[in-house]
Amino acid sequence: MRHSLGLVRNVYGTEYGSTKGTALLGYTAVTGSMVRRQIAAAKAGKWVANPIQAVPQGERNRTRIGATTVGQAAMKSAYWLAVLARATRDRSLITVAEAFSDLGSRSDRGDKAIANTYRSAARNIKPRHGKAGKYVAATLGSIATQTANARQIESDQGGLLNRLLASSDTIGEYLPTPKKAKRVGAAVIASIAASAVLLTYFMVIRPMRRGGE
Image (cartoon, rainbow, N blue to C red; front, side, top):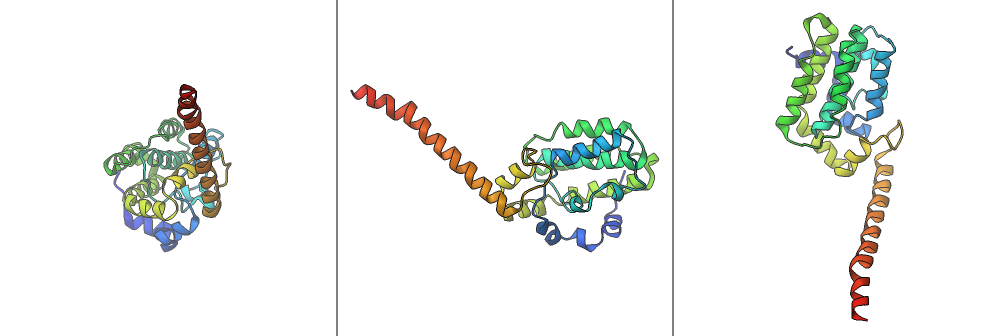
């Protein structure tokens, strides 16, 4: 199904179409818990009249910006397919959403692979899905064009650390602020450095001393 950028602008409005608005949110990643909530809602028959009703206000920007890895593209695809399942009552999409969610750990960063992930997701949207299908197809088509913008936002917000924290479920349902994420990252880096020092001592320096004795 072809997407229309015009449709995206009409239903999103200028606020959600700007990378500035997205950057202010703090993160660009969709977490596993976000996807699981949508899938669980679809399984429970928590239907909605249209896709936008299924998306919490606090998740709207983050789910509409591009991805910088195949894993994140798969997670965003899973999220929107689950949303479409809720809007169309098509339970067959639940299984598809779960399959895309299973790809969430992939770290490939190639533009072509990311774009192919969105295209693969869009192939599950059929004419029978009507306006809701067109909406989700337009969403996937739009975020597929935003990889470069997403990488710039990611760079501004902490690069690898941002990706690791934003895609982690160990931090709970709510993502930390960028300031908190940097503090956590500093602690993780310090811990890794300390472990490296200890390993070096026990595996290299200490054996050398004993050998000298």
